[in-house]
Amino acid sequence: MKKILRVETGGARLDAFLAAELDGYSRGFLKGLVQSGAVRVGGERRAPDARVAEGEVVVLELPEKTPEASLDFESWVLFEDRRLLVLDKPSGLLMHPLGSSWLTRPEAARAESEDNLAALLQVHRPEILKARTPRCGIVHRLDRPTSGVLLVAKDPETWSALCAGFERREMSKTYRAIARGAMSGAARVQAPVGRAPGLRRVVVTSLGKSAETAFRPVARKREATLVEARPLTGRTHQIRAHLAHVGHPVMGDPEFDRPGKGECVAPRLMLHAYRLAFAHPATARPAEFTAEPPRDFSAFWRGLK
Image (tube, rainbow, N blue to C red):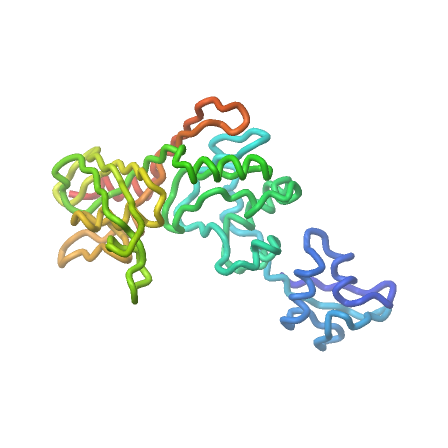
């Protein structure tokens, strides 16, 4: 997004001038833009501490964009009070940028060219950042292709309480997955998961951390099973690794699903965070939120044989 600014009163540092002219951006973030070459004064690059003169024209490219997905943000809200926000995250939405710069400079998330939840929260719930809530309020994460129930804290105290709840395994999580093949019955998989040497993906490995997942078939078809999965530990990708371990990978899983000739190919990872139950951090009363699988998930299931 291009911005054109005219200097009315000269003498200020370039980064200070930008900070005074643009709302919603820190001086540190704007300094980084100047250093990256995204700011020109009279068509030329300048250092952040260079002084601007009256009448000069400053042109800058702001990488922040209003994400297309943000148009639907309010429709994702399952519940909200002054302490927390519960969202039905759409598949394809990135949780936050890669790297750690957004943790110390949250506005860096808005400078990304790709939609991400950390940026959307700053735009649609600025009070979260104003309260100095860590990680823009993000308490836990779902993989980009995974849809479903997601908790966001609106203040630091709630963030700490919810994180502690996840750490103590007090959160009851239920997922729905479309697994390849017909599962014979309920199963409880106890197998360590982690990244084996030389591998980027998370797999069942003796070098991993202990993990346990309970699986229950909800419905079966010849080529797939609609599975309810309850992770009893909170390891990264454990549902995906455990289903692959028992020979029924999540359909559309780029790491594990290898459809044979003539077999159905899923358009994405068919994994959905269906239900989340926990004690509300402010009242200690039981709270439970459910998000029905999205249209693409349900349509894919209906189309299977």
